[in-house]
Image (cartoon, rainbow, N blue to C red; front, top):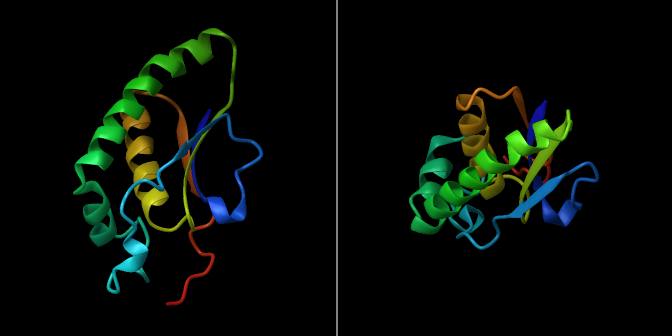
Length: 125
């Protein structure tokens, strides 16, 4: 079972994470007034984040690495894998990228679930 988990670094790295990726290098939708109250589950935030070439390149590279790693973890007998993707608050960038990774892992035929640990923290809706 693979879990793709988004989180906010300001709430700590998940203790059960096997792989941790930091997407704080991407522009932050938090600073765009109309995007701030939304999350990475909203199309407007997803489009904003994925419009940056860096986001698309990172996703491509990460998916390539996971295509290599997952079968090797399985071969070694690992039956649980937690892929954690973090941004500052865990509401925008990490959620967007976690959703994209989840879709790719699922499309590859693996058993996968998604969780957004910090998506509702600090929400001011």
